[in-house]
Length: 108
Image (cartoon, rainbow, N blue to C red; front, side, top):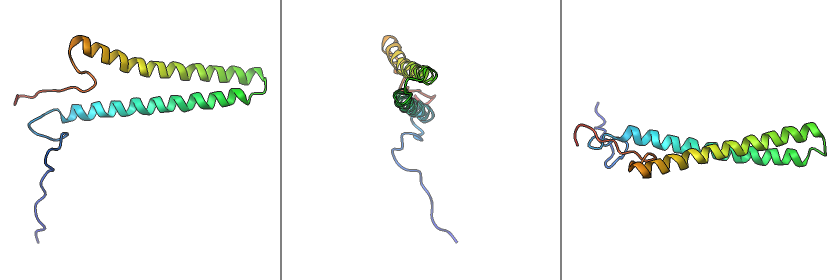
């Protein structure tokens, strides 16, 4: 019993055999997704640390823990944003699009 044939989708940028850059595009998109998730995580950490600071009622130990968490959240957010900014800047100076690489295979 035969059900038919399955053909790959047309114009699929991830698995286009003439492009040969699908894997690198997938990796680039995964890194962008991870950077976005990290940024959202650090913003939530900052909000929760601010709430803990406001609800510490003057307790020095809780205030110190909240300030440490606020500082770590800000530092993490700066590191994530700085990494994207630095890679974009280096890519523009060198002339290579680091955030969206184009890899040419033997066919081109």
